Image (cartoon, rainbow, N blue to C red; front, side):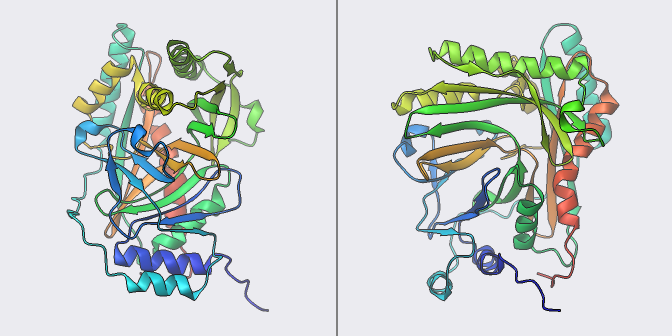
Length: 384
C-alpha cells in the first residue's frame, strides 16, 4: 500500500529552514478556510507604536497584552508571500542565499510554572474584591512550563494544530526579539472589510468542557452568563462612545473551540475609511474584559501587580493587515511560547463574585489541553 503524500511537505521543509536561520516569518490559517499563508521578512520586523503607522501597509501585526512589560508591537512586512506548499526549489534557493538574521535578540529566560497556591491565592483575592463591589471581573492567568519530547518538531506541531482546529485562527510566528509562538485562537478581536468599510467584533466568555450533548444543548450557570454580559456591554458602550451608529448586536450563542464550549455575541458595524477611527477602536477594545476584566484599568492594574509571570503576547492580539481586502485581528488565546527544549503554556479564567477557586483552576487545565494535546501527539517524526 502506498503512503499518502503529505500536502504540507514543502511548507514543513521551509519552516524548518526559517526556524534554524532565525528568519522572521509567520504562517497562519484563518478560521473555516483551507489555506495556510506564510509571510517571510528578510530583515528585522518594524517596531510600531501606532496603528496609523501601518494604515496603508500589508503584513502581519503582533501586539502584546501590555506595553508596560517591555514587550514591543511588531509588524512583519513580507518580502515573500506563499500559499500552502505551492512553491518550488527557487524559494528554498532564495532563502538559503540569506545569512542567519542578526538581531539584538536576547536569549529568553525560561519562566517558572505558576504554582496552584499562587493562582488560587490570586483568585480568592479577586473573589473577595468582586463581592465587595470593588471590581466586577478580573481574568487571572497562569503558565505551565514543560519539556518537549525528543521527537518534537515545531513545523509538524503547527500543521497538526491547523488540522485539529479548523474553526480557530492558527499561527506560528518567529520574530527574533519576541521569540517563537504558536496558537489556535477562537476569539476575533476585529475584522475589517476594506471594500465596503464594515467591521465585526465579538464578545467571547464563559467556558465549559464539551460533553456528548450537541453544542446548543450546553446550559450556562449564572456566573458564566454574567461574565459574558460584562464583555458584551463593554463592547456596546465603546461603540456608542465612538459614535458608531447602525451597529447590530446578536443574541448570545454557543460556539465550540476544540473540546471547549463558549458563549459568543457578535457585533457588526460600519467603519470610516479614516484609520484614526480604527486605531481609537483598538485602543479602547484591547484588552477587553474577556482577557483583562472590568473595570478595564483597575483589572489590568491588578493583573500587572499580582501575576508573577509576564503574559507577553498571550492575550495580546495578532493577524494579517490589509491582505485580501481584509484585516483580521484575533486575541492571542490558547497559545504557547517555544523556548529551546521547553514550551510555555498560557491560560486564564474570568473571576467574578460567584466564582469557585478550584473550578477556575480546572478551567485553565482544560484550556491548556487545547495546545498540550497537539504537542504531545508527535508520532513517527525524527528528532529535531
